[in-house]
Image (cartoon, rainbow over all chains, first blue to last red; front, top):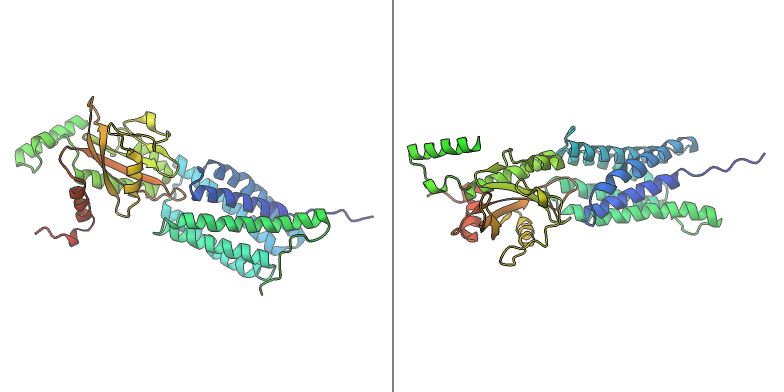
Length: 186
Length: 182
């Protein structure tokens, strides 16, 4: 009996991560309001990415298991923080959100090291993500102008996540690697 | 309640010969406008967008004498809080001009983007009055997470103050040590 072909959960994880990151940056640079960010953050960046992350467990991929599940939780938590702030429930000040971003920066720094052992494209995605988090941290602690800089920088991060997603999907549908992800950095 | 407090204040000034002239007791002073704008910016930094509801209330601390704090979003081009003009809340603001054709909110957005905030002069209806008066408003950025364009402002209705004079007053209040009293 032929083995049943399984999909790679990473394609959904990267899709949700990239798309929701992108839409938040559209907001951060001032092109749009916060509404779609919240709903996409709950559904795609949050729920879908988190489920993809949990599915990574069965593939034996600890990096994907941790990263997708955690960033899925990040989006759900961020959306709930913003909803809470709107409805005056456990209100988070700008400084509170700054510290929330700081812990995610530290967490990202750990995964960033791991990403450098996986592929060039993933290492680039995590480098851009880490820089983006640092810029957002600074934006919340005295340099609000950096929000816009972080916005454009993180759009590149979202694009590189989509690149890896496209690499996986195209390799599957074309039967060959059309978008190479490059050698690991370390 | 407000009237009662104003009466009490008037009595106080009458008794102790306060600095303010009797005619000015009902008018907001530039010092008050600056203090209110600073407190409102701090308030929004702590409360985030949930603070807009309080700024939209006529009964809160953000409405006093003949003035009030209002808030607007310069990036998304809309009013977010205005206790006197709820009809403006949520509406675009950049196209609003005064009787002299001045784009009020374009000027306010420009002034508010300076680090210490800034003053803008325009014509606006004083609460309770029929005609428009000369209004000088002080505005600055309110730092809210993931909302970079929010400004808060409050103004005084006055025919004589100059922008330069009010800017100097603001600098003095921000850093009293730089400007000794004598």
